[in-house]
Amino acid sequence: MKRSNPIIPEGINAEPGARNEAAEFLRLVLALGIMVALAGFLIFNAGRLFGGLIPFSWEQALAGDQPDSRFGAAGDAAVTRRLQQLANRLTEARPLPQGMAVTLHYIDTERVNAFAGLGGHIYIFRGLLDQLETENAVAALLGHEIGHVAERHVVKNLSGAVLVQIAFAAVFGDSTALGGLGGEILRLEMLAFSRGMERQADSFALTSQEELYGHFGGYLELFAVLGRADEKDDSQAMSFLQTHPQSKSRAEQARILAREKGLGVTGDSVAWEAPASGAPDEE
Amino acid sequence: MEFLLDYGFFLVLLGLGFFSGRYMEKRHYRMLIRREAESDVMIFTDSTVPPGLGLKTQQLVVGSAVISNDYFKAVLSSLRKIFGGNIGAYETLLDRARREAVLRMKSEARALDAGTVINVKFETTSISKGKSVVTVEVLAYGTAVA
Image (cartoon, rainbow over all chains, first blue to last red; front, side, top):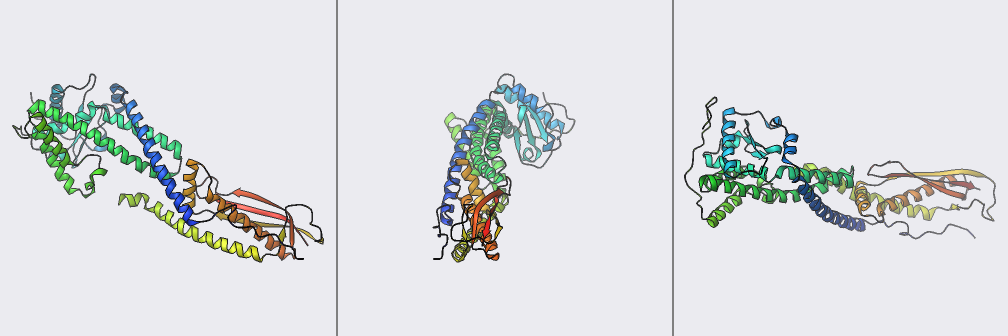
């Protein structure tokens, strides 16, 4: 009788199957997405909470006295002084929390942007400032950025982001694909937080406008300019992916608030003229 | 555009790994089943010669197979490692490598006119050493008797 080893049935030690693997992959990606979104939300919020507890003096020490030179060369000193004077008026009308101060930096590039950095440093770019015709609009811009400083948005966001990055590195290690996927999900969550912060800063700006000028005309002028910049830039088309809510919706929010407060959206405006270099400071 | 630049390469590798990996695996399993059915060499893990077979010669025979996972399975395994549980991707890898190694060992035995291999043992080594795409070598060895 010829002997032979028996043929072992398939599927005991391993189950090859493309459909099983594809289904398993989709299930795990979905589960990972939910886990990352939830964990990211909690960790980012925790980071923001602790970030708000960091003393402003520590933030100033971290940022230093000098502007960040990566953003570009400093612009006309006379313009910088004028901006600082306007910022001082705004903080007199609506005071910052004790111990906080803002430092204005005018950056000589064509970039249409302005933002607040750590330690109360506020950067205004020539590309945006040149498009604003009234002091009211400039005050709205500064009021918005001062709002970010007052609410400690920069240090809160930074704390949240650092904590999330540490958590991701601990979980995903050197798997760049998984880390990238998780990071993309988290970026969408952080955008939602950013938009909430933008609304807070807008509220600060509107209050400053009300104190200084008694109407919101400058604010609307600012967002008319930003709205034109939005339309030119195709990458800004999908608003839910932006850090800033679209300019049109922000202008509409201002109109609604004006109606609620019984304020006008137009009124007396002060012209904004760039001072000549070496011009004496205004009183 | 930025999304494509950031993740396009990853998605292409994933798709390539899925389709080519599935095709290669199916083809390999078909070949394994056919060759296992055709093979007339018997294997035993016991070190004693089965009664009735006789013993004229003894010779060490070895079969070695090195097989790698595809990129899709590597990503799937990484996901599974987060949540825990059975890693099916590695099971098929080891199953294929083990069966291939046995068939090659049997081929060596047949080349020596031996119809039996006793004292069969296995050694498994990971060659990839921590990389996400796993490569294993399975060594099957035993004593061919004729």
